Amino acid sequence: MKEYYARRAAEYEDIYLKAERQEDLNQLKAILSGAFSGMDVLEIACGTGYWTQILAKTARSILATDINPGVLELAREKNYGACNVSFALADAYGLGKLDWQRNCAFHGFWWSHLPRKRIPEFLVALHGKLCPDSKVIMIDNLFVEGSSTPLARRDDAGNTYQFRRLKDGSTHEVLKNFSSESMLREDLRGWSRYLRFRPFRYYWMAEYKTISNQGQEAELAGH
Image (tube, rainbow, N blue to C red; front, side):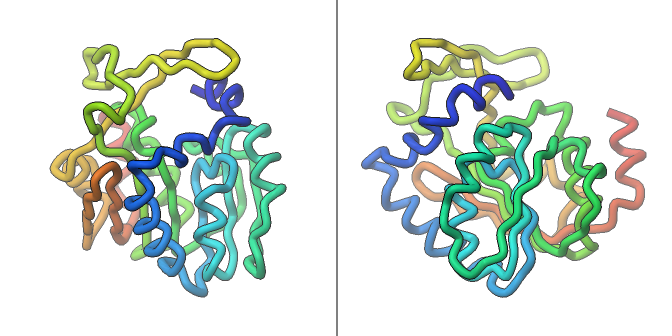
């Protein structure tokens, strides 16, 4: 996955050019541009900064993280206006190595790339960098026949995969899980409160408040 997104960096944002998705994207941008007004945001898997720019319209500051140096270089070139945006090279499963804590977080199109068995591990890492009752917003894809890349296979753990071809001619098998509202609620049971799920035509958005990590490390150990 890391290699795929490193090689895809130059064409990272092409997916947002699909004509049929513009109505959804405009709605998401309108919501997210004011979702963290005056707040200090932790962003996971920021990529080239496409959504960072949207959040920056009203956020006070953003700490945007990604595991790929190449996409962070592209993100740093963008204009974020008056928002104080900083970047950090960080593994989403290893956020404990960075010395900060915030009260809100955002990740876009990262949840679908989480292997099912690593969801608790990621939540421990993320919530460990957030205060209790922090606000978390995530967005991701719905599977839409004829628009989404077809699924190639499903493994024994329930993960689904796509074959994707880049402009350099290379083909990559990419883990891509499509969550329903019921799946997401089950995955976040015991980790969240006030979960609100909002479906669009091609995407979904979820917002919740975190609960304490107390006892969650034990749950992780049991997976």
